[in-house]
Length: 66
Image (tube, rainbow, N blue to C red; front, side):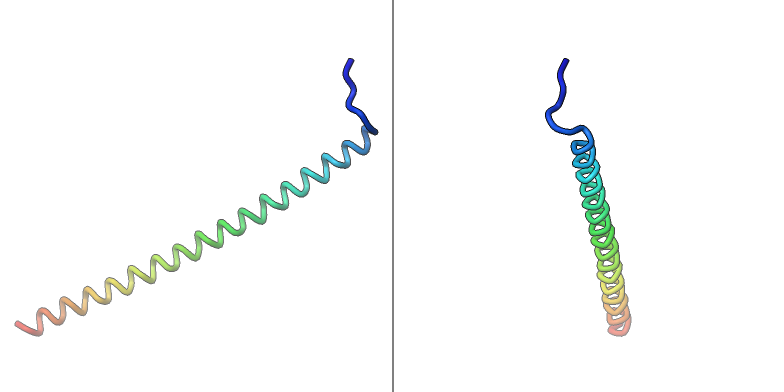
């Protein structure tokens, strides 16, 4: 029968610490992704709003010339 070397309690503690660190890293990464998505969405809306404003000004200028 195979047995891992070392104290089982020590191995469990190391596994728990690794799992906790992995979970904390995953949460941090998820937060960063959410922030990037929010920022990207905000910037996209601003670009669209500016372009719509420019298009409306172009339309008004076209009607004023007629």
